Amino acid sequence: MPSPPDSPPRRPSPLLQVRDLSVSFRVSGKVIQAVQHIDFTLEKERTLALVGESGSGKSVTALSIVQLLPYPQAFHPSGTILLEGRELLGSPESVLRSIRGGRIGMIFQEPLSSLNPLHTVEQQINETLLLHKKLAKNAARQRTLELLDLVGLDDPANTLHKRPHQLSGGQCQRVMIAMALANEPDLLIADEPTTALDVTIQAQVLALLKDLQRRLGMAMLLITHDLNIVRKIADHVCVLHQGKMVESGPVASVFQQPAHVYTRRLLDAEPRGGPEPFAPSTDPLLTAEDVKVWFPVKRGILKRTVDHFRAVDGISVRLFPGRTLGVVGESGSGKTTLGLALLRLIPSTGTIVFQGRRLDRVAWRELRPLRRQMQIVFQDPFGSLNPRMSVTQIIGEGLQVHGLSNPSQREERIIQSLQDVEMEPDSRHRYAHEFSGGQRQRISLARALVLHPALLILDEPTSALDMSVQAQMVDLLRRLQQRHAMAYLFISHDLKVVRAVSHDILVMHKGRVVEHGPAEEITRRPKHPYTRKLMAAAFDLASS
Image: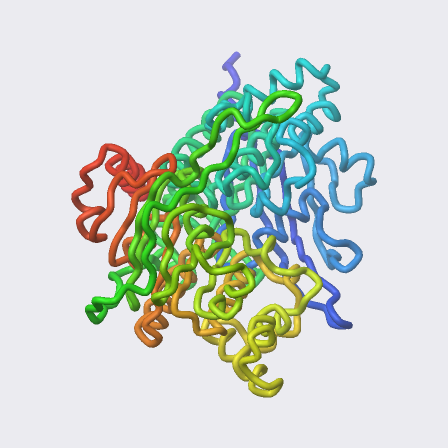
């Protein structure tokens, strides 16, 4: 009797199936369609990437899976979401609680607004361990230390007792990743998991996620605007545009032979060129000498100061009108602290001269008239925008405080500022929570630009933006600088963007300057070993 033919290999059963998913929102009596008829399947141990511009529906799709949208304002006209055959849409809250943080972990886009500001790192990570694994306190602490070490945080034992405001943006992002991985989930939803991370930590985190995926058999749904990351770790990609899926397939196939014009546009988008030439000036706009920001380290019952954390340790800078100084370095190197000190938003020692006036000798009340001339765009747009104020109120607040225009002129300037950052004028009547992360970043930029400052400090201004909008934003910043002769202090971990906008680059490491010079010289012929490590990490990440 002939033996039966060999049966074909069985395909792995899908972990997650999303079919005909649509999401709409009720806003001011109108229905807005955010996502329309999306389909995809994710198998175990595989990575699916959702890519597209801000507002394309990526995060809304992810939040639908764990049912974290603001219901009943949000609703699903159609669709089904199956986790190993179990329907998630409309599931009871008790079922969803067991799945969230247990079977499904999620890394949110904005860690500073997702972490509880009143709880320590240990309390926040322990919460999910105690809820899902019922660990004893000592076991939970040991597991938390392991997780913090896994995600590359220095001195995990000391980090346990810190609160989010005591950490840098990149450090908060790593805490969020540790929380998502705490219970070894079957599915990890990673919404821009490396947005706030510098290039060296990006490479480490991506390698960590891939390693954990292999060891735990974990599937990953990756949401990102960085196509280099998609190339590096994703197996399958879905391209979203205005809430619709315009293309999907294996990463190699879609990236090598994109079928849709929108996909081709995304692949071609990258900041190009260099900063605009500037007119030589002998008079610096801002000069800082030996700036130091030391935070006391207190221990014991009486909380005596036993040491100091040297966040900024004797840095000198000069900024000229029409010129950009890029500040780069890993998370916690002191980049943001330096920017805040120069604006006198935090106490510091050293000499700071702005437009010929000693800021370090000016009383706090006398600084207000100078604030108009020096503005800042913060790293976390959602945390820096008042949720109770409309966009008109947010952008117009500075005009009102400084008495720069009457109500009708104020409206014109607000509209012009929104148009400058590529946003529709009608968006001025909405609130911050109604926008995507990238759109909120542009609102923050519009708020600073409306005052026409002489000095603009940009703290990771493009980190929340997708690739095509990054290129637009870089072009916009260069045009505005040329038009208004503004000086920029550009803080970023994205070395491609820094190179595209900066005339000079300052490299920081542990509160000190390790290298400083023309941007071309620093990026092409770095001298210090730390600078060479940064450039090598950026090159490897881009080329892989």
